[in-house]
Length: 217
Image (cartoon, rainbow, N blue to C red):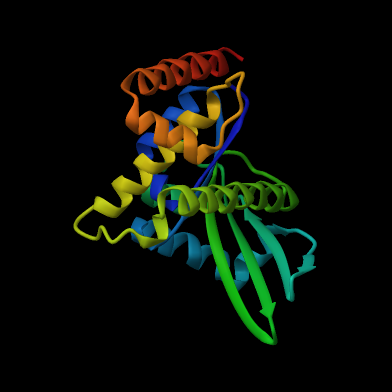
C-alpha cells in the first residue's frame, strides 16, 4: 500500500497494472514495441514538438566511472487524454521518457526509454526510480549469470525464454527473502534446495511467510 512498483516491459500488462492499483500502489511500467500501438502513440506524443510546452523536464544528471561517461534526463507528460481515449490503460496518469547518452572509450550511444505512470511524478522522481530499478536489475542479472549461467541459456521456442527467466528470478527472490541464522552463499542455497527436498520445502514455506508479513506492512 502506498508503494511504487517498477517493472520492465515484460510485465507491462493490463492485468498487472490493475493488480497494483487494487493493492493501493502505484506503478512505473517500462514500455517497448511489444505493446504495439500504445508504445507508438506514447513515443509520438512525447516526441511531438507541440507537446514540449506541456512536458516537464529534469536537470541532466551525469555519472562517470570505469572509463564511462553517462548522462540521463527525464521528461513527464500529463496531457494524455488522446492516449487514454485510444487505449484506456488502467490508472494511467502520465507518460514518461528517460533519455540516456553513454560515452565509452570515445564511442557514444543514445537510448530513449518510455514509461507508463499511475501518478504524475516530477521528472527527477522518475529519473531516480528508473535508476534504482536498473541498479537492482543489474545486480540480479549478475547473480543469475554467476549462479545459473543465465547468459548461456539457449531456450528460444515460443515464450520459453521469458518463462524460464521468470522462474529463475522467482527462485533467487525466494532464497533472498528467507533469513537463516547461518549465512550461506546464493549458489550453495540453490544447490542445497536442488539436492534436499526438505530444505526446498523449508524455503517455500519461509518465503510465503515472509511475503505475507510484507503484505501486512
